[in-house]
Length: 86
Image 1 (tube, helix red, strand yellow):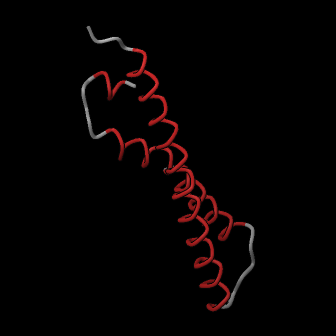
Image 2 (tube, helix red, strand yellow; image 1 turned 90 degrees about the horizontal axis):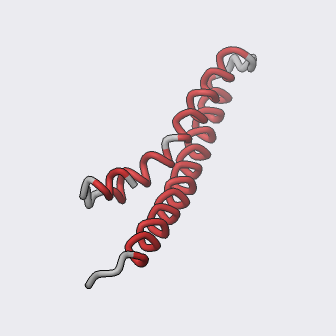
């Protein structure tokens, strides 16, 4: 909303990246969990865990980014739909 009020017409990418940034927290927590709770010693198992975690967080990034973008897009369309231009 504040970006639209300041006439920043590149709000699309910010809405996508801001909502998708929750996947960064998810990935960092998975790394923290890997080093503190898991007892994986082999390299192959470590690579599998990190590979699947990376794929999972990328999918989560795309999913939450799309949800954030579409909700912001709907909000902006609703706001500008209410404004009456005379």
